[in-house]
Amino acid sequence: MPSRLGSVLLLAAALLLGACSSKPVLEIRQTDVPQSLSQQQVEQAILTALQQRRWSVVERRPGHITASIVQRQILRAVIDIRYDERSYSISHRSSEGLEYRDGKIHRTYNNWVTYLDRNIQQVLHSRAPNEPLP
Image (tube, rainbow, N blue to C red; front, top):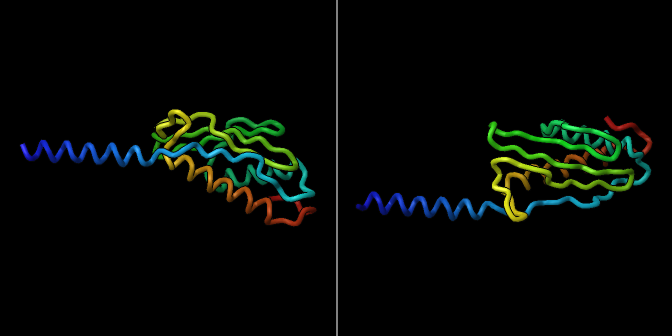
């Protein structure tokens, strides 16, 4: 009987910990880019950051990139990035294995988006306005 109680307690603890890992979905909205950059330079900065963070471009057209990331073949996220010469936004499109429900998602997704956003900012600010981006 004691082993049964232990199993029940472990299951309850795991469920509580799992519930704590869900956070509101991080949406990056209208993040400003440095002045004097063209839409093409902003696009190139986003593509560079996606590559640095190991995201794959699914679809690309002017002002919009859809990208995905897969981790351990069980976690997958797809995002939409909309941009112009003034700003960019990152939004959740779909996910698998990340417990997305009612506007909440596993914190791993938010970490991926946070790191991607930081990389985009680093690339955007790494060059003088008139220099081409990598």
